[in-house]
Length: 286
Ligand SMILES: C[S@@+](CC[C@H](N)C(=O)[O-])C[C@H]1O[C@@H](n2cnc3c(N)ncnc32)[C@H](O)[C@@H]1O
Image (cartoon, rainbow, N blue to C red):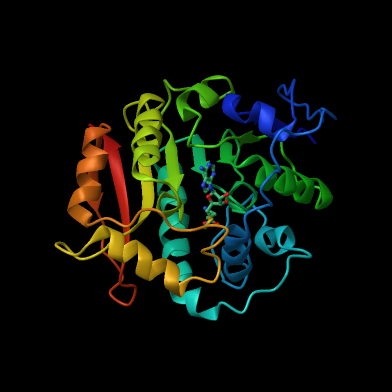
């Protein structure tokens, strides 16, 4: 089993990791300068809920992967999230299968958390790259080791999108910017401030060849409503808003403008009417 962990430059001093190379995971025992944040609880909650769904999988894939990755996680009672997570899970599963049908052989999952798709949709010649905060990535790597997952085609990259350019991190890995890629941002952008979203979208664009697809879930408010009020209302409803607050809720138009400014042409897909405030979109390099 080859666990590949790559370190975001900006996180080096914070997490006390160094000298990470392909196929190796080395722990630097120097004390961290800042206390590490714990693994993302929101991503655990999403994974726990997603593990209850009946979903497609590839011939080489593991349909039990999500369930196994969640072993030992504190259970969640956030059942009210189920409809939204079901809708977006279906959407992103379809995006992976659609990308495979187009011959896309690289999948980059930003803010991957405990996403099981690299195991569920394992396929010959397809490489998955996952980017997330260091503590979440370390916990995920441990879980992958414990379930004996085949990691030959999975690269875990530690990052903080507030500081790191994803294009540089991907460029330092085995990702090939000259080959089409499916980029996934599921349940991520709401947790980033607007400036970080712009940097992320721009970085992904510069790592995207013609034929690449960006699939994203967006937290949106009605046109004309206040973005600040929408963020405040969303966080007031969320149990995890202290540790992992939402920072960005925008109108669809504003979001499309951000994507366009970063070089992505958005193609709106149908929004499940029972999920107000969530938009599921695909975009292509323009
Ligand atoms: C709600 S979870 C979604 C996880 C996964 N995409 C899913 O749907 O199961 C949001 C994820 O984004 C990650 N994240 C949030 N802010 C980040 C940042 N600045 N840099 C890297 N990852 C971040 C969190 O660690 C967490 O894993």
